[in-house]
Amino acid sequence: MAEIAFYKDSFIAIDAEVVPIQDRAHQFGDGIYEVIRVYNGKPFYLEAHLERLGNSAAAIQLSLPYTLDEIADICHEAVARSAIDEAEIYLQISRGIHSRQHHFPEPTSPVLALTVKEARLVSFKKRMEGLRVLTTEDDRWKNCYIKSLNLLPNVLAKQKAKEHGCDEAIYHENDTVKEGSSSNIFVVKKGLLFTYPPLKGILHGVTRKIVLNLAGELDIETKEEPFSLDFLYEADEVFLSSTSLEIMPVKQVDNQLLPTERPITAKLQELFQKLK
Ligand code: PDD
View 1 (cartoon, protein in one colour):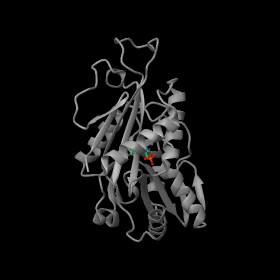
View 2 (tube, rainbow, N blue to C red; view 1 turned 30 degrees about the vertical axis):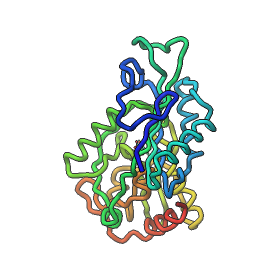
View 3 (tube, rainbow, N blue to C red; view 1 turned 90 degrees about the vertical axis):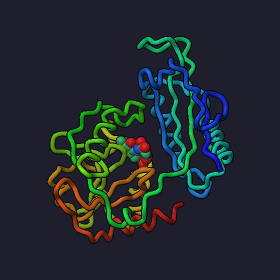
């Protein structure tokens, strides 16, 4: 079992120091990424992640260095080479390596970089207890549906949450709750399930979509519509969704403690486990 990386066109050691200084990924954040969970040696919802990768690429006029099928093959091969069953694939595509200039270089030769590492497992205790979250004004750009490499606002929001003893920062725009710094957010109120609509201002999470489908199977009515901070504080249940968190209950929003009985979250968590 060994963590592994891929850069440009070959597999390399995870700690190989290879990325050229002029790769636009780190000079401009000019690229896109995906994080994909691997359960039992099998990438989870790989197709949905690659479809979103294709959409992100189109949105920034980036032509992919490989077809989506070829990227899927590289993911499978990387996982097989790592022999890690419970893994996390990180993959990014930058607009390539060029002398520094803001506009697109010509010709453009985009670069794929990928790692397969052991998954960061969430402890059972945390999954039962739930997380604390801190609300914070959304200071990101308007195109958060693009999974871009520019994550500085997300990094700062997560750090602020950490400094307040919280696990996640929840963005709100004025009074409207949007999503977490690396997760989507759901609220249960009177048996209905609410989450922000799939507009350009949030990432259209793969796990978010899975949750909505599972809610459909459970005959839980879903409402993809904006809701306020007060609505969040007064929720019956709140949970986050993401590739690494899966479905994660929230126990406290700012200073507001939430009910500890979470029947709908529990049902969704149970169904989610069966998908793996
Ligand atoms: N984060 N919203 C934001 C801002 C995110 O960064 C993420 C994912 C999500 C959830 O998306 P998904 O269900 O497709 O993982 C929502 C990844 C995991 C990350 O940056 O590590």
